[in-house]
Amino acid sequence: MNTGLAVAELFWEPFARNEFMRNALLASALVSVICAIAGTYVVLRGLSFVGDALAHGVIPGIALALLFGVPGVVGAVIGAAVMMGGVSVITSRVRLSADTAIGLLFVGMLSLGVIITSRSTSFVGDITRILFGELLGVDTTDLAWQAGVLVVVAVIAFVAHRPFVLMSLDDGLARTSGFSVRFFHGLMLTMVAMAVVGSFQLVGTLLVLGLLVAPAATGALLARRVSTMMLVASVCGVVSSYVGLFTSYHFDVAAGASIVFTSVYLFVVVAVLTIPRRLRGTSELPHQHEHAH
Amino acid sequence: MNYTSHSIAASRLDVGYGLHRVVREIDLRTQGGDLIALIGTNGSGKSTLLKTLAGMLPALHGEVSVLGTRPGEAPKRVAFLPQHPVSSHTLPLRARDIVAMGRYAHLGLFKRAGSTDREIVERTMQRTGASEFADKPLREMSGGQQQRTHLAQVLAREAEVLLLDEPTAGLDIAGKAAVAEVIATERARGVTVVLATHDLADAASATAVMLLAQRVVAFGPPSQALSDQNVRECFGFTQPH
Image (cartoon, rainbow over all chains, first blue to last red; front, side):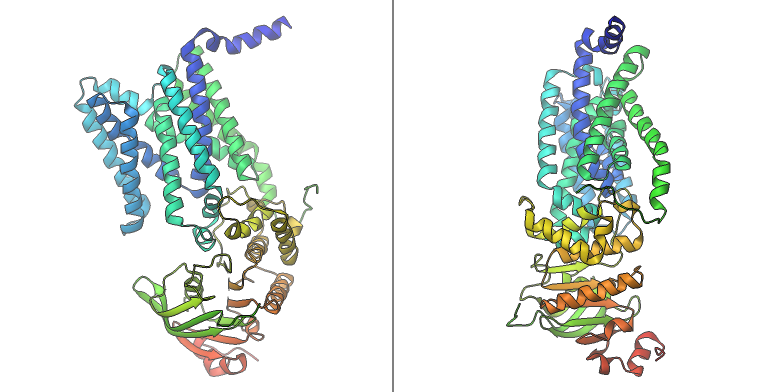
């Protein structure tokens, strides 16, 4: 009994002792759920590259905000809006393959961000904060902001669930079911942008894609339903947050990167463990279904 | 179901993509219960015409109406089965979830699926044989099982016009027979079916056949339209009798 308590204490100790660790855990749990919801559709609709581009598109906005002493989030929102506008113009008007055009836009925004940041006197500190986040500096205002983002992302996913699922299967199916693909694609990008803006403070713009994609991809391997995929992704995100923070505390390594690394590692483990099941699934043997009516 | 006017009406319709007109000058009139078979090789314009009728491509010239409205404006009453529907391997959807999506046109964003919707889903899955693997996820289904699932989804809309692009692709003999039975039952309900196919046998029971080769080669009752000369012009060879 005492040993059990001692073990529990060992695992909770970093969080019991330090408020910044508790805030970091709470913030990363909130962000895990935000990214699980948005990331599910990023994975289903194949928007990983667009998500990555959005994550880097916010950099010039944040850099400008820091230069003018405005909260970074304000700049990130503006940066995300510009990037989303760029992505939608490119995907509808430019006669280049979307990945080439989005790739160019993304490095263009990234370099602009570095140029703006290089005007700042604390260049190295600023760019490091933008790219790798500041997980251990989270305060209650940040938590409130992240809770707000979670509510908005959850409402969007709830309201637009049907067109989002139809579009994941086939855009044409969504259109012939009476849903505007242009509108709901825009809404999905907005949701992804909100997840990026809500998460970049924690793990930085370089690694935010890991939070968006890795837990959702793990969910896709295990789940048979979209709602289960979101649930699995949330659990994976929260577990990775805890493991990452715990590791970071005891081994004195970067917190945000530890979380992202754990979530990717978790994906690899699940992918390897589910190989036999996937091989079974692709063999064409007829088998009775296990559903109980 | 009685229509006072035509279920599909097209006159001097040009279909295509952007500036590229694939087929020009299509004239078509259908009544409830009709089966129109579109016959032609790949690239002949069958799918382009179906997509235009479904409202996925704009008409490039001429006039077209489906159930008295512009194509795409009556999603509850028109259902489209595309060729090889895109299905990502990662999609965590079971057969019954995919079939239930056929009800979304009626349910919109917020309406809850009721017992009637669930009954329709179960019934249509039985009709195409998808009920045998109702809980199987998409990624574990064979091509034929996916096709049966997508066909059930289209039927679950309970539409008045069915636009089917090669519904028998990837199906075995039993599957093909099930599709033929489904089409016959829908026609008996007064549904207009437009069917794109490579297979001349599918066209035998049609009200009218349209032979396409980037133009309308022939259009009329099967006995007239499927003459040796027309078929040769359409496919480049004559079907053995």
